[in-house]
Length: 195
View 1 (tube, one colour):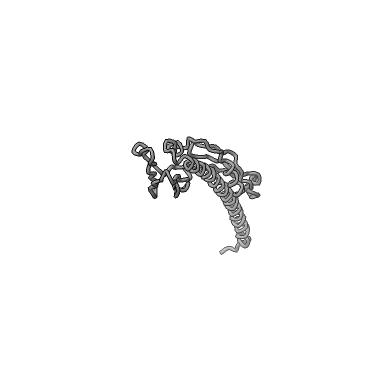
View 2: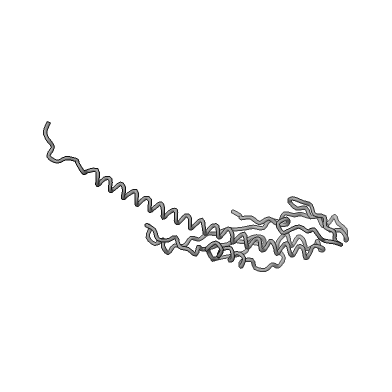
C-alpha cells in the first residue's frame, strides 16, 4: 500500500469552527426574533388594557346615567343603546397605555358601544444582530365593546310601577318610591375585547 504524503489531520477544526459560528449566528437571530416578539406582546397588552379602560369608563358613565333616569323608563333604552351623551373616555385609555410602557397613537369610539385603540411601545426592540432594530417600536391595536346585559318591557307597566329589569344573572324589581339596591355597572353591561 502506498504511503500518503499529506495526512487528513486538522481538517475537522475548520469545519468545527464553521458549524459553531453558524450556530452562534442562528442563536443571535432567534434571540432577536424573541426580543421583537416580547416587545410586540408588551404593546398588545398595552393596547388591550387601554381599549378595555376606555370601554369600562364609558360603561360606568352609561350606568350612572341609567341611575339618574331610573324613574323614567322611557329613557332606559337610550342608555342601553349608548346614545346618551358621555364624556370622552380616551384619557383613561392613555393612562393604562402609559402604565404598560406605551402611548396612544389613535383612540376612537366604534359606534356608541365600543372603542378601538392603537398604541406604540415606548421602548424600542433594542440592539441585536438584525440591523435597524434599535430604532424599531412595536405597535398594536385592540377593540373593546360594551354589551348590554339587561332587557325590560315598558308597555306592560302602569304609571306607578317600574318595569322589571331582567339582566343576565338577576331580575330587578325597582320600587319607584324607594329606588335602592340598584344594579352595579357590571350587572348592566359587559365589557370585553372584540376580535
